[in-house]
Amino acid sequence: MTACQPEDFDANCPQRLLLDQLTEKWSMLVLIALDEGPLRFNAVKRQLMGVTQKALTQCLRRLERNGIVTRRVVPASPIAVEYAITPLGRSVQRPLRTMYRWTTEHMAEVEQARAAFDRRAAGDVDEARAESAAAIGSPP
Image (cartoon, rainbow, N blue to C red; front, side, top):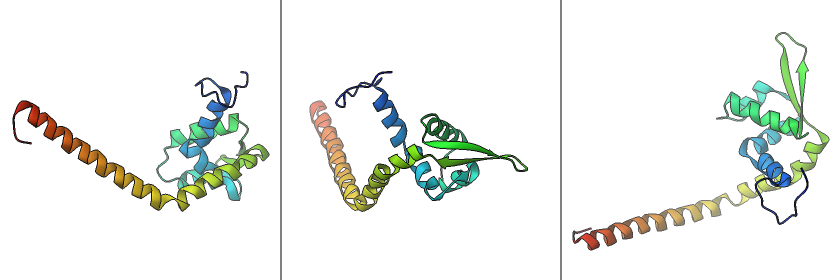
């Protein structure tokens, strides 16, 4: 694959594909979970409430393929697998942490915007019902 221009949003652009994979919800949360050090699969899963085993496995494989995390088999009984952030993965943590911090700092504003949108959307539905009723000559 060749690099695309920064303004290129083509679905096949390798930078876009990587960005999609890094900003996917489980990827960001996995990197936050692994921030303090290596964790076994089930420890990561316990921290990410709601993630399925399949979704977490797929996420960790994508991160490993991209060089963001490493996977190490721990010779124990039973055999366990441990994941850790690579130096390349550490280099992406700062912007991801910034984005995560932004969600915390601006959540109240986002909730206000959502509530305003929902009120407008509900009004649009009521208005559309009234227009439909008027068009067919029945009361709203």
